[in-house]
Image 1 (cartoon, rainbow, N blue to C red):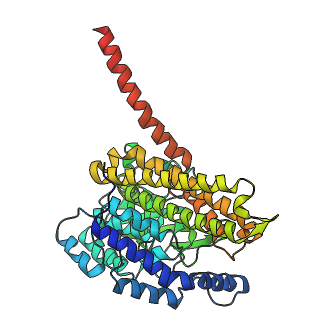
Image 2 (cartoon, one colour; image 1 turned 60 degrees about the horizontal axis):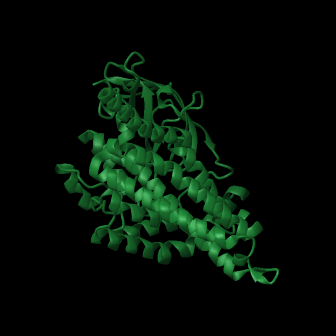
Image 3 (cartoon, rainbow, N blue to C red; image 1 turned 90 degrees about the horizontal axis):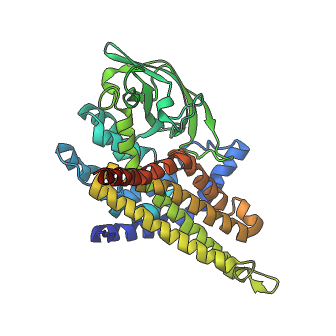
Length: 429
């Protein structure tokens, strides 16, 4: 195996880091503080995108740091349009260090047009969308002129098992009719959100993994209603947010089904493989930032006549954090390499493993950083409380830890089942 990034990936990673350091970092804290004050005081609308963010996007795009998540390996006429929308056709392995760099900043993925759920939705349209669907929604998403939402989880069922989803997407003639309720619909709060990717039950009598469809629903379709915006431990994640959305007799053309009825699980797995590498590497970037802050604090503050870094086992904790971060980074690079070389099926266990490892490591490192900061670590003076919440949320956002551990265990046990059957066969002979 070879984890060496291409020269182009090295160049882009350094450019991203430089842009974050010079352009985003100087204003990020002030933007978050202003947004928080708007929420508390009821002044400016915190769901409106600050003009500074649009300006950062313009600068990033001018430097070619735009849509870097776009995958390699796509052929045909549409691939030729990447040049007008950014993107360099990086492999998963090449994009991984860029994703890590963007994890250092809450704003960076949005500034580079590489944020969830838009990047995942764009990949759905790129891989599975019809030419008409791509023209209407993919081009504007890659252009940054619209935003999107992803509606899968439901409040009335255990959504860790996606076969439980009950919102119906019934084909009636040349229409699809949606009825039901979703929640944790990411991106629905953005003022430029214009389309939702919705998973719905189309055929209850079909095989378990062929019952559901992915449907593109314009945000302004009659019957689509945002019932409420949901906070995550007090954070609303403006201007994107997560909402509870009801669908009442929502009718869209049959052509809005992605790839055809019954293919939702195929699409979801195609969407989540690369996306999990992105999430996991952003978690590594977040953990690196937390460790950076912890070390700075540990060396700059003293108690009982000694630097904080020399007290209470903090040196061991710093070493453990470094070991955990570096080990998990290698685990993610291995998953990215396997996605590139053997595909999503061949990397099933590895992709599931990083979804467990990365946010857990980030959460542990951030928790240590909060502890060494004392009361300041709990406040909005530092990004640590928001970072901890983000890491904790990721342990649920793409499926709970337990589901991913079950996949890893299933793949591992299958090796022994095959070995046992071969051994028994030889003994019988």
